[in-house]
Image 1 (cartoon, rainbow, N blue to C red):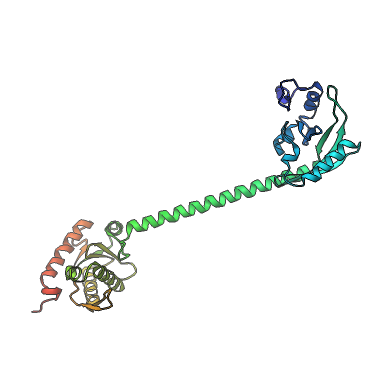
Image 2: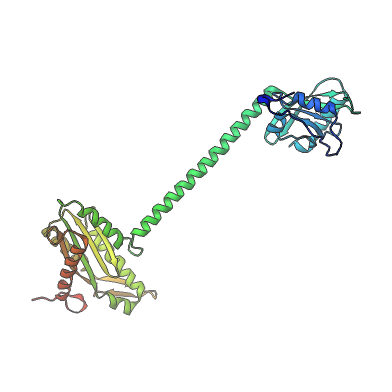
Length: 336
């Protein structure tokens, strides 16, 4: 008997593992049922599988030499009872076998001793309807498995996207104040200045008296001051304005569509927001008044003062130092 496409025929080996060749009768049975569309097996009286066809091997992982009672998941005693009944009677006996999650009904009947053998055997043949149901169930389980894997993959993808988004925000944010940092501030400026027709202003600010706070009260008080300043400055700005902490006690603001007059007025609004004193509650419960905190400001506008970020920041920084020189000790502006 030859297989399809001219392939070599299936030649079973002796399942007992002995050196003697398999009896010819078993070879003939094996070759006869190999291509059957249903799972078929031939068992000896010890319920050892002597022959298992392709369907039994592929769909149920049954192989010659295995003990059938060791392979089923449940009801072993009922299986033994059914096999014993089949081998001792001349009528077919239905057997319900459970392989993993599949439950298949087989018909079992006695096979009288074959030539070269001395013992009767049991032939098992799967019921086609149950086999179809098992295959459908197997496909459904495979579908559910892949759906779970797909869901897991989507969750991992979303987690990676979230982590990437978080890392991007962290890379563009000042960790202390939550404002833009220098890098993201420059990115915003590049976008604003790319439109040569729209006026843009930048305001530069530097705190006065900040070092004295750190020296006298410690860095926790200094961090409190920076956060308070960031909150107050943010409260005076429009939604489209961009406030950043450039480092240390230096802050800057981008003002889209702002003329020099608008920039000057907005700068004074920022200055007034810092006028109220800042209080610091120390770890020992005491409260300190940090009235020295003020800031010097300077602004520059495009295109009047430059067309690129560095040019505008230089002009704003120069004007900020001119503003600082008009302040006396503790950052208080001198009159007259």
